[in-house]
Length: 247
Image 1 (cartoon, rainbow, N blue to C red):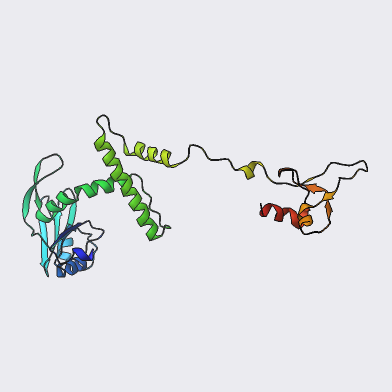
Image 2: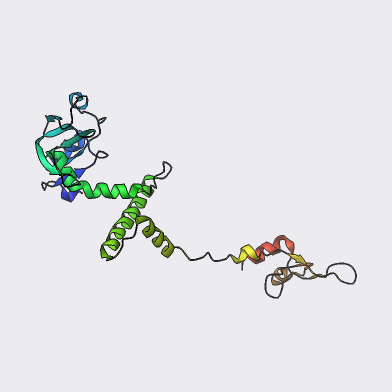
């Protein structure tokens, strides 16, 4: 973001990022910021936080070019801005009705409504876990945003009925995952040694171990592998494990 600083740009952030310290630092870099603010942030004037307001009223204070305000809507809304004053202006809500709002809030809603909508859509499928490392959270969030953006583009190209986000995510999963898992041969056909058939003397036949034979060692065994081709005779220890490890 360093290349964006010192150019007079405006930034809009929600209460997760905003603070007075950050606003002052950005202002020193000729970058303005506006957005909602958490009431427990450091250096917020108590006179603003604890003010009792009626619906539509505001309370604001300025310091070092930073405005911190509180507006009573359906609930208390804290906000911060280094670009706008605490003027009340007419702004349209989602229903198209005009309503007086503090200028910082009106502009924040204007430019952040799409972001808030994205956050709302992603909140339907939460993935955050306390045990997940921060860099993995970033990667998962990027995937979530890619899914949401592709979902919006897909619906924009559709003439008829729109697909729900749930169905869209399922369709992506069905394309990425195989139709059925490939059977594991080893799970069904384990290499378990068996003894040769019993001879006339009542004992199992013994044949030369193929592993020992490669080492030019003469050693007979009564065990063989019923799975491998030609059913090779193999000593139990240690030849049987070595033979199948090298295959």
